[in-house]
Length: 154
Image 1 (tube, rainbow, N blue to C red):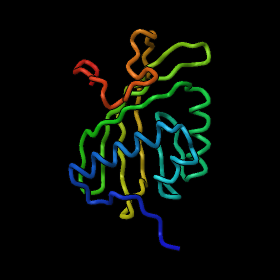
Image 2 (image 1 turned 30 degrees about the horizontal axis):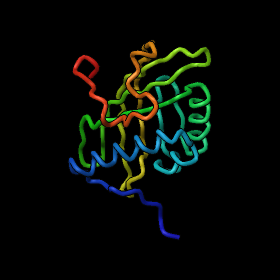
Image 3 (image 1 turned 90 degrees about the horizontal axis):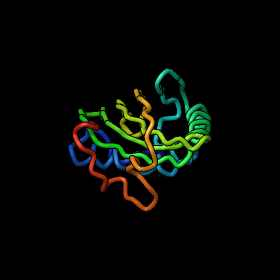
Image 4 (image 1 turned 180 degrees about the vertical axis):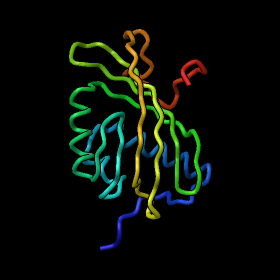
């Protein structure tokens, strides 16, 4: 069996880094942990806010729990910076809790990739802000990539 690979591979260019970011965005918007896990090395290390975990089984468990709470999840990621095998992204996602309260999460991630294009390290910092239904950007039927995100939300 050939080793796993997830193009584009490092070293990244502006074009390949942007493609990598949008591929991650698309995978996460499936809200399917079993799909998302395969973008990461089997022993990938994560820090998600104050949670530290390692390995695909832990990633699947974490995401399953996350999306059980964050209903209506819709995500947008944008390239912030990159080097040979590292990418930094800024992101925004919206979700609602069990009571129907909408939230927008703002944050930054830094990613380090193995030579095969799988992410071997992911660190995420984020903040949750209450929003009303009228303030939502990523409503049903809206392409998250077409929403204008103005400077005050960077």
